[in-house]
Image (tube, rainbow, N blue to C red; front, side, top):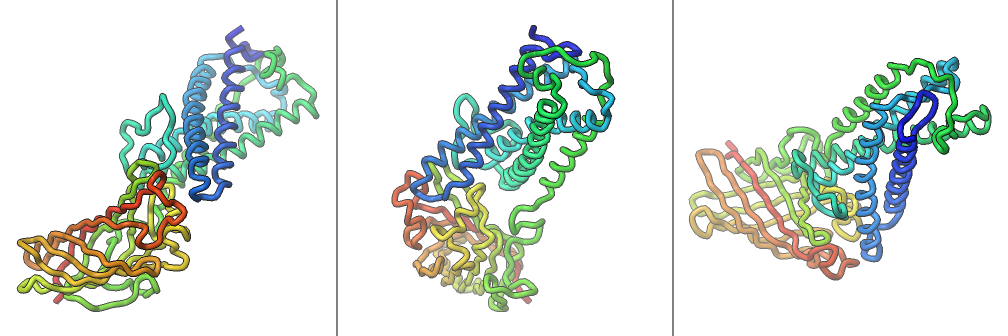
Length: 403
């Protein structure tokens, strides 16, 4: 019989139960195995396959769980076998509703994180890589990723309690609780009240988990403080030395970069940097020194990998420096010609940019292309199949004249 009764689960409910369990456990196993593997050229293809399967199965689990929950809402719920054990029954129902939430929140948050940050390991057909109303945003991707990780903890706890409860009914109580879900065995009094508090408390738990996750800031981007200032912060550090040079004070700015990963363009940023700028409007010449805190690098889901020894190596080289001479070429067009020191390697760099000055406010934007190999980056990725050679760099800032 497809439908439930007050004392048994129907064929469809049982099929949904075991199918969702299979999909979720498979996705968890693939994700944990992927996390255990090193990130290098030898494992990149394996990781891509693992995470593509993990994401695809997770999305499939979401739709299957949604169908299961909708079916459960229109079906009678078999009553507990021991309704007189009120505390035990309440705990079982709370775990049950927490699991329902995990089956939706965990895969949905993973899908949102993927859709908000294009990059590694695509979701396989028939599911797309984007979602309606989900923008391409590091902040959205980060928030969804934190929800995904926290919901995994709730899922693990609820699964463990669910399995332990089932084992208790088999080994200690020796009743038909598990048999109702495996064979459709009819058992129980048939009449009992289900707790209205259990689903409400589960909603509160999930609201708290999601709210907490969304309050976790992006690494080193905690609010609306300017992303660049022309002098050091109140407490100088090795990555941002104190300086009072220059006649222009940067009030806001961005330093971003793009690189191709597995053929897809991925955007990153270096949010913490300082700039000492000296510029003479009359001659169109000047100098600039930019100090970049590479430990604050953000590159979607591979930020930690990008900070590793094979790329920026931030443990050994926590800062980078660009020192250049500024020259006006024509109109608002300028160049900054100098040296970029990154990973302890000095490379000549020319940065074309435009500069407009209105009163005491200057606006600048420029971009250039660097080759990661010039800095010894990605030596274990000798071709562009996984990580592209060219890295596009974009910088924009607004500065005010110093008194």
